[in-house]
Length: 93
Length: 289
Image (cartoon, each protein chain N blue to C red):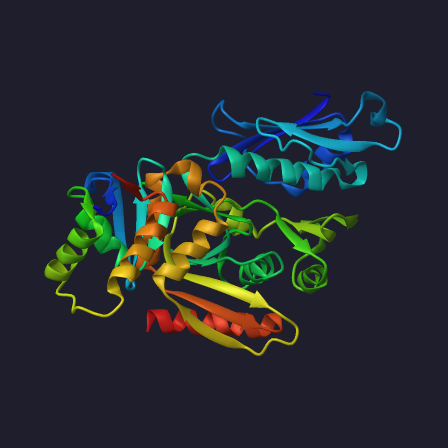
C-alpha cells in the first residue's frame, strides 16, 4: 500500500529569516509565525516544489543536504512531518 | 462630555473626556507642557459613571473609548487618573497600526536607543525613569514604537507609572512638582505618576536607532548576572511582548527579525536598582568600545 503523500505551500508563500541556527518563518496564508529547527525548513523546501511521500522526501533530503543514512531516520522524519502538519505548514496531499 | 482635555504624546493624540472634573484636572497638571494634537484624528477615551447615579454615589469610573475591553472592572473615582492612563494605553495597544508596539521602556543617548522589556515587576519603568534623570533621554516607560518602514524607534513619553518601592526611590531625585497624586489601594498596588524630564517632552518627535535590547529581571535575592540572548530567543520574547504583532502580519515579522539581527541583546538579573544601573552602563560602554 503506498504511504501518505505530503504537500507544503510554495516558497513565495513563506518568509524565512535565519536566526542563529534556527529559522523564523512567516506563513502568509495563515499569518502565523513559527520558529523552526533543522530539518523542518529543509522539509518545507523540498515539499514546496511538489507533493511527495516519506520515502521520496527522505531521498531528496539525503541527496540535497548530503545527509548520512542513519538508523531510525524514517521514523524521525514521520515525527517531524506530524509536527509540521499539526502546525498547519504541511498537509496530506 | 462635561470635562475634556486633548494632548499629544509622540505620534499619538488623545482626547480624554470625563463626567467628573477631578481626573481631567489631574491629567492637565501631570501633562503640563505637552503639546496639543496637531491633527484632527485622535484616540478617544471616555471616563464615565458605571451607572448614571454612580456619578455621585460611591462614584466609579468605567473606561470607554474607540477601543474597549469588555468586562473591565470600573475603578474608584479617586483612581480616575489611573483610569485615564489605562484608557490611553488601551487605545495605543489596540489601535496603533503605524508602529509595532513592544511592551518595553526605551532610553536614548547620542541618537541610539536602549530597549528594556520584561514581565511586570522586572523594573523596566524604574530603570528608564532613573536613567532619564541621569543623562539619558527617556523615550517611553511603557511602549516602544518600532517604525515598520525605517526600523527606528519613535518616542512615546507618557507619564511614567511608578509602583510601590520605585515611588520613594524617584522622590529622592525628582522635584515634587513633576509627580501626580499618590494613588493607594489600586488594583496594581500603590501608584504614582511622574512627568518625564523636560528634554523627553521637548524631543518627543525625535526618533532613534535601536542599539541594544535588555531583558531585566529583578529579585531581592537574585545575584547580579548578565547573559547574552541570541536573536531567536530575543525574537520570541519580543513577539510575546508586542500587543499588535499578530494584527500587523508580515510587515511586523520583517521589522522584528530585522531588529533582532542587527541589535545585540542581553538578559540581566539584579537585586537592587543601583546594581542594574551599573550593569546597563557597563553593557552600553562595551557595545560601543
